[in-house]
Length: 367
Image (cartoon, rainbow, N blue to C red; front, top):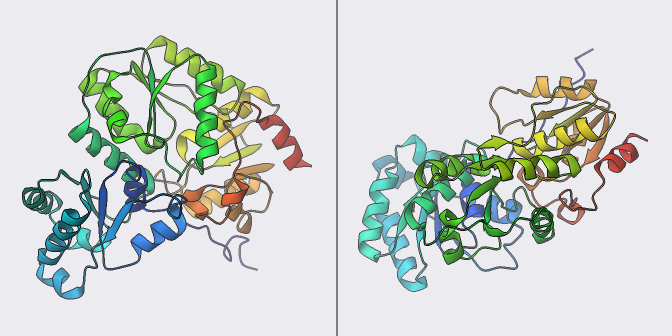
């Protein structure tokens, strides 16, 4: 008989191009995805819950075989300039999928030409359609801040970095996160980049510290630390232990991780790294179970066979509902747009809400 996991397979996390589009969605820019077709529709159809409710300028270049073979960027440049002249965005972002990467598309050179012709700032974000959304989000936010951030007057507020619907599914979860952080006694200056206007995001350097709630903003946090001497704390408030750890870390004004590197076999948490590690830390300290964090396709080195073996050994897996198709243990389902798109959008779990009882949810799932 074949091994138990040979007939099942996991899905994949959404790509870096979706991360770029998601991070910059609300900032009044125009995003051009250089690709033949498919990646843009994948993003708008599966990864973007704001698509039908909020206007945004997302375009596909329609790269064809002839232009790819000859390296002719004329059509892309002319189409982008024409759209920009008609729509007048505050800025233009140029990213791309795998074919531009393969043919060595010159992002910086083309961005320079478009900016000269339109007199509109252009951000070249060199994606390849192969890496995960984490890379795309981080590249986009860092590129935006390098171009537009400015400091006026330092204050004692904090920024919350790494927030997009790909991880934080809807406005309710974002609001829960804001309220929970505010309940710790902190004033939030900027959420990067949801519920945030262009001019508000520009003021990121004015805050005293950054709270990085997903790995989508790690490079950005390091850039802000180098450029503006801003310390940052990594962690997500998913329960009382993590609340205390984050509060302690922020008050110290030093760069640190509020979560811990837990080792456990009772419960496995699968998802984006900071979320998974924060959740595992909370479980280890507030329940009678030990927990481990796994972040496939976001972190190199965890293959499918290893993932499935580890989940098989656990009493409970906390993961997106789609994982139910490939694991053989009990599941506490917490949907993740990065993994399953908008399929489970109406089943979002408010895990950063002060009333969310992680221990109670685990006990119910284990019944």
